[in-house]
Amino acid sequence: NLRQLIEEEKDFYMSFVTSKKLTIAFHGEKDINIFADRNMLKTILRNLITNSVKYSNPGGKIKIESKVLPSIVEIAISDTGVGIAPERLEKIFTLDEKITTRGTADEKGSGLGLLLCKEFIEKHNGRIWINSELHKGTTVFFTLPLG
Image 1: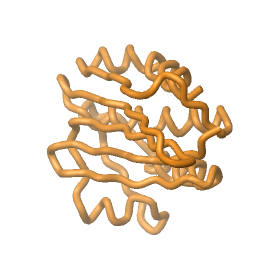
Image 2 (image 1 turned 120 degrees about the vertical axis):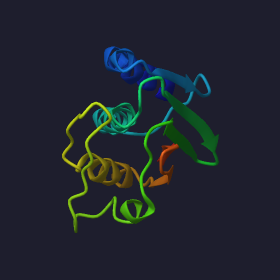
Image 3 (image 1 turned 90 degrees about the vertical axis):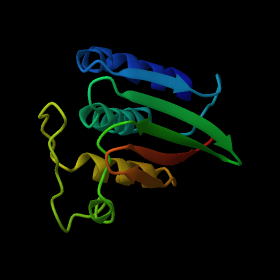
């Protein structure tokens, strides 16, 4: 059940969210069953939520949404954070260059979380993409097959 898993992961990060004075909300249908490895999906959600928290300024907002489409569910994790420059966005899913940026509270990162998410999502026959605007925020979208 996608909603249950997202709520668990959202709750897991509440102290981190609260410490940065952020708000986080989930909007989606109540009962969406997907066909996915639970541990891989938790890893995907944790990486994406962590990135949203890491790159959001105090007072920012994080929104998690799910939408059922024919045979798949589309999940979007949006933030009102620092955004990603277009030249960095082009290379974000490659190993060619190590792309890391410190978070708004100087949080560290390895730059490998998105690559891991991409690999796990593709193993489920899904896809991942990002829309971002510098200084306005980022939305990471991914799809998974319905159960």
